[in-house]
Length: 288
Image (cartoon, rainbow, N blue to C red):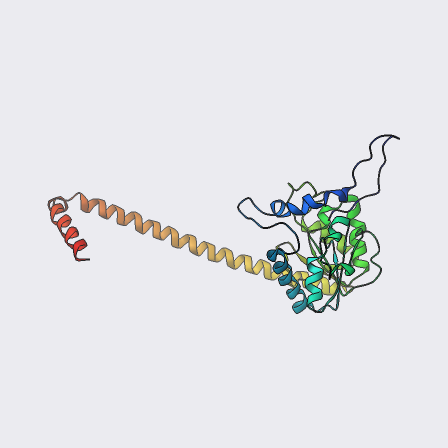
């Protein structure tokens, strides 16, 4: 959810501007699917009781538990608590915070004691094995993102992070950035991408940031990742060129075959045997 900045009051007596978190009330979650999906895709409203959402977050929770094995997790920007509920159902001590009081009021009863209203720039009160921040920070005003990232890094040694790099048409997206922007902010606090962890079960742009004090190990990991990515790209390009060559040869063969067929059709024999071939085709169809 988008975080609210400090109020900037107008002249005395002027109407007070709405709180940014007012954007995340019933209407937002009722239309959440249409905000996130293409017109060809459909999904039910974002609420408890809709199996598609509970199953989706259940899969994410299972991946987190199996691959990262955290004992404690904070979902920073938990909305109505799907991930918190899924993690707790799997034995993880998970909490959630969200700026939207309405969203927290919609958290399932069994999960509600573990979710509270809070800004991501406010101290979380305790440390966690893992903090999840999934499609949240693009909602913050740009001037608040550095403080939010610093707060995430203060309270965990690992942050599972995702923020859309290109969803500009959502009106609540105030700070859509490419991944290098977020990588730079986390690096200021000694957090770097874990290049050996694939977080694509979250989203294509997801990153697992870890606290890494030993810079040579960080550089070595990035170099290994870059080398293998380059190697894979080279091999993909070789395969592409091979396929292009095969397509070119196939087209050439087809062109030669068409020329031979045209030459055959122009012969007297082809013209004189037309009726015989038609009769043969008709007899064959009857036999079938």
